[in-house]
Amino acid sequence: METSSARHDLDLFARVSHGRTADEVVRQIELLLLEGVLRDGDRLPGERELSQRFDVSRPILREALKELETRGLLVSHHGGGTYVADIIGQVFSRPVVELIARHQRATVDYLEYRRALEAITAELAAQRATDIDRQVLKGIVEDMRRAHASGRFEDELAADVDFHNAIGEAAHNIILLHTLRSCYRLLEQGIFFHRHLVFASDHARSQLLSQHEAICAAIVRGDRAAARAAAEAHIDHIGEAIREAERTGEWQRISQLRMQQRNAAGKSE
Image (cartoon, rainbow, N blue to C red; front, side, top):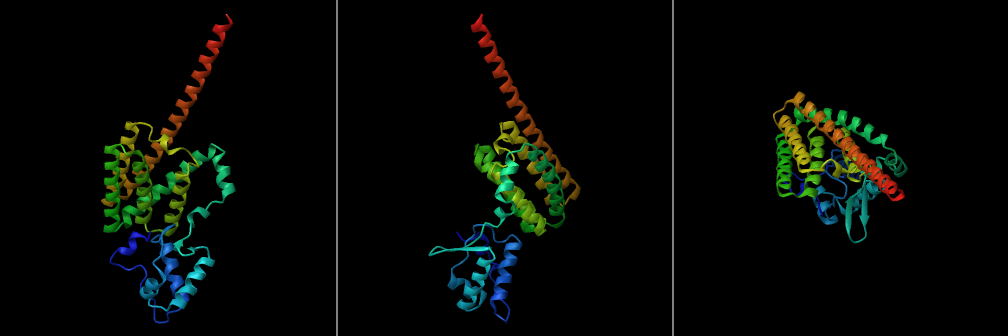
């Protein structure tokens, strides 16, 4: 599906300068990728439409798209169009991802990293967010509230990731933006911990919603210190929820072993 941003009044694929070379088309598309406007899996318009919007000939457009494919930024499906490549997934190699997944210490380090990363991102978002950024954040929080009220658990999880990615966009720092996206890609894949652990109860979900609301409110009113503090408190809460879930699971395992031992002892008497 073509990215929704392409349907707004501002044209993503604006006319290139008078030179009208393939390099200029490449540069414009690269900037859209770098700035996070085009995302993994977004489909580009068809060749005819795209050449018209760039105001370049179709041979020049084909040359530009071929170069972007060579760079691993676009992929073409025969008869199915041209798409943004899965560039976020290449931030961590598969061996590193599998190594991380096998060692529990990685979860602690991940949360420590995210705490620092999200704190500075929320602070920058409070300082730099545009009116559109603030509208997007408030809209996602409304989606969270509706999903929470109706018990749509998976929708609430999806809105959680959307929310944090939107903060990354509102910070207007391209390095933070892509770093956050890579972090959430791994989180969605369950590399560090199972996200359902954090949403284990209605009470836990209510707490998380309140924390997201606090972060959003601080960013919307431009309170940098409050945004940082709210982001840090949110990650601290997630860390404690994971530790509690692990303790509960371990206690359950120990209780089960004790019960088995008592049953075995009773049978031997």
